[in-house]
Amino acid sequence: MTLGNSISNIFGVSPIKPLQNHMAEVINCVSKLEDFLNTAFDDDWDKAATVFDAISANEQSADDLKKQFRMHMPKSLFMPVSRGDLLSILTQQDHIANLTKDICGIILGRQMAIPKALRSDFIGFADSSVETCKKAHGAINELDELLETGFAGSEVKFVQKLIRELATQEQKVDKKELKLRKKLFNLEAELPPVNVMFMYNIIDQIGALADTAEQIGNQVELLLAK
Picture 1 (cartoon, rainbow, N blue to C red):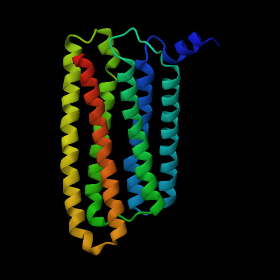
Picture 2 (tube, rainbow, N blue to C red; picture 1 turned 60 degrees about the vertical axis):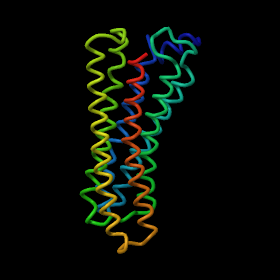
Picture 3 (cartoon, rainbow, N blue to C red; picture 1 turned 90 degrees about the vertical axis):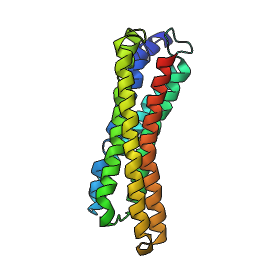
């Protein structure tokens, strides 16, 4: 196989489709977070380990797609988006998969016990963060349409609307995070200090999922402005 054919097989007409495929695998990964948390909260660690294995497989698949993208992406693109912009989005997408695996790995490794008083808020917070990632996925899925329309017209307005919705969702995550932190703070005296430290760490990382998704939206918005 020649280098030209190799590039063509991976990228086709443009590198947008491989980027979208990578994000789809990232979403497959992060979407399993709720299932993992529910099994962990039920102390069903065998099932949690099974879900973690599935998350790890998705993360590895996303990592493989990332490496292919980086290795075979042309140095110059004859399109209105730069190589650097696409690689930046790719890195942010990859961070979501890595965070998901890290979150679940810490909880599983420590068989972390979450107080019952926090569980509903914990699940709601995680679900809201995952929803932010899905909204970022929606914006990425419009990149090919943006290219076809030359980053102009009604498609731009539609994507701008998606980005506004993404930002609004991320703000909801922030509010849920503050509420969860406050509840944990009120319970600190009743819990082992080391457990409290790890719970705050998990909360930080779940919040970082939404922050990273918002960064993807911001990167798409920058593409619209160029």
